[in-house]
Length: 409
Image 1 (cartoon, rainbow, N blue to C red):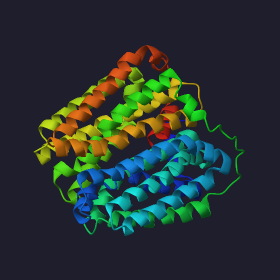
Image 2: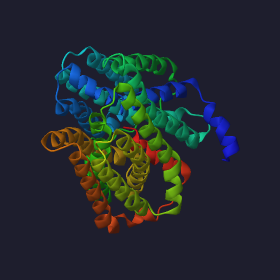
Image 3: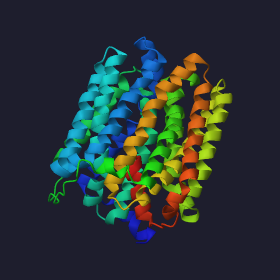
């Protein structure tokens, strides 16, 4: 399909596709939505930074663990039911977060939010591909747009609403997700595809594949760096909600741009493992620089935005590698990989806050840099087992699908 004929088809989609795409944007906003309000929550609810960072931990632990069973659930109750259950859970638990009076309550309700998010995002791509006109390539580009928009706008919306109250972003998600729930319920129609139930143990057994295990370990350590940059940085920045929101809007925009455009360009010219072994050390270097300039807000903002650019490349390359690593169904490989990598994301925020309290604001970034170096070593030492992914040459649509299946959460 040429670019001239593909472009119009991308935007001429049935209403049900737009309903799911809108819900995707809001779901992806949840990744960075709470970033701008972390200091405000800590101050308003008299919580320590460690307690506040557990908002990320509870969300990511449950999201990761739920990823192990979402494909099993959706293969039995169907895509629409899975989407609606996920959206409903997000609405309920975001509302409970907004109404909470203690940080402990928000931590618990964010866990429920993570369950809803896992159910929704694990099913959304397949739903869009199945309902979109213009083929899977058009559907994937549309989903990419939703992913990038959500990641970039989440912190900005959190900053705008957070200027009013730390409860504002949570109420915003409730309203937007309620609209998405009604839209999906009313507009997602059509014949129900035949379901093939997946074995409950499939994602667990997938981690026994050496190539997938190496990539999952790489992602675990890499995500410690990712979420230190994302979840810890609002504290040393010292900005208000709007300042933090604008900073991470730049971070999300950079991540989206390199994920969608730069990384595929690199992957067409270089081996997958080569791209990873260039990008991961660059990220480690960026984190080391952040450790030494942490007292300068302007310099730290620059490190955050540059980090976003590198993160986009790593995300895309890692997830493409996962999709090419085994002959397993993509949903199974992605579920297994995502479950492990989110554990790294869950550990990083409170660990960073503990190191800050025990030492100084630069030490968490050093810890993150060391973790990313370990991720690089996983690729170096495991490269013989990853040789087959360097020989794979997927087409553009497959590249996009790989990125999205793995990075949606």
